[in-house]
Length: 222
Image 1 (tube, helix red, strand yellow):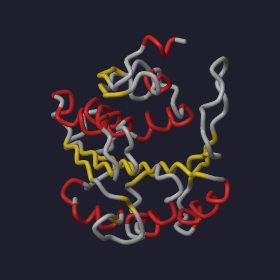
Image 2 (cartoon, helix red, strand yellow; image 1 turned 90 degrees about the vertical axis):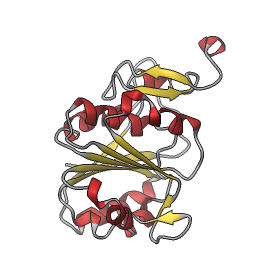
Image 3 (cartoon, one colour; image 1 turned 90 degrees about the horizontal axis):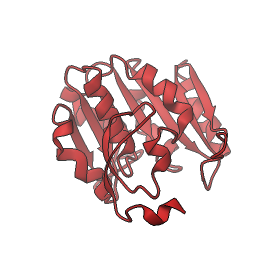
Image 4 (cartoon, helix red, strand yellow; image 1 turned 180 degrees about the vertical axis):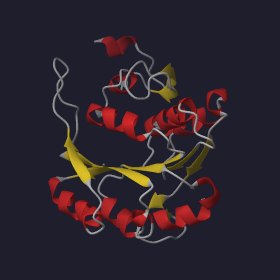
């Protein structure tokens, strides 16, 4: 019922709670209420707040409407990162992603939006994680986070990250689409003796499950 009274187009909002509390974003209020109240993918909240400490950069692979791009940019600035940098990959055009980039709120964080897929090879439409690290090497020194949400393309993206996966200064947050992909994604980390957890969403009291079309889990490094 409340959706009838909300704007139909994206509008500037402040995140009210959760790890990105205080971040300014450009979101559709009809479809972003969990994000605004810090309840979207809430099982990751504690991990994000713990792992962002002392990080200098974030790769947002599958940026979509920019929730993580600007949430992490906000945290990097807030935590006093020396040269904060967010590198976002999104092949589709989302006004919610492009609009906040030049807001004064984010002038202290360098944000680059790459309109490409991330995969196992680099070409006109696709780039590998390893090649992205080579291209943006001056900004990707030190400790960072790689967040990935590419709806089933996880394996191809990880195939293109053979060097990056060996970097112990990086933490990974990978959304896994479907139970069948869990062991395949996990193998990249098992082979490198890198400890991780698999996190699964549980329904919240009153508001229940998030609406998802496929079984979803997250691999996070520890």
